[in-house]
Length: 81
Image 1: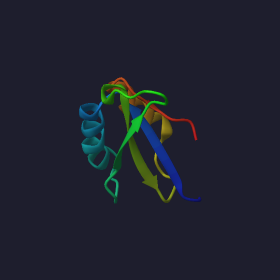
Image 2: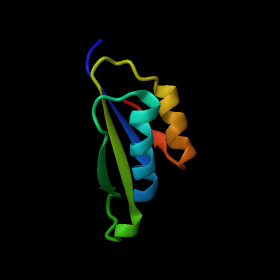
Image 3: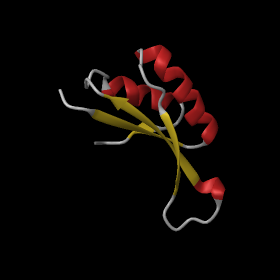
Image 4: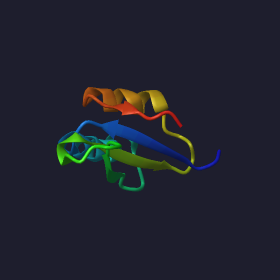
């Protein structure tokens, strides 16, 4: 299986940090997920930024449904590839 990158979209930094902390424990990740601030197009207000948690999945072993469920617990979602 080829390298897969999963992107979870979260509503704020706190939610993104909670998800990023839960991922290695819940899914046995070798690498720490990346947190990325994603300002919404056309928005100047920093409060309107979404946060992305980027998970590298080199073996394609992670279950997208489980990732989406984790994001949903924090009012987020898994971005479609």
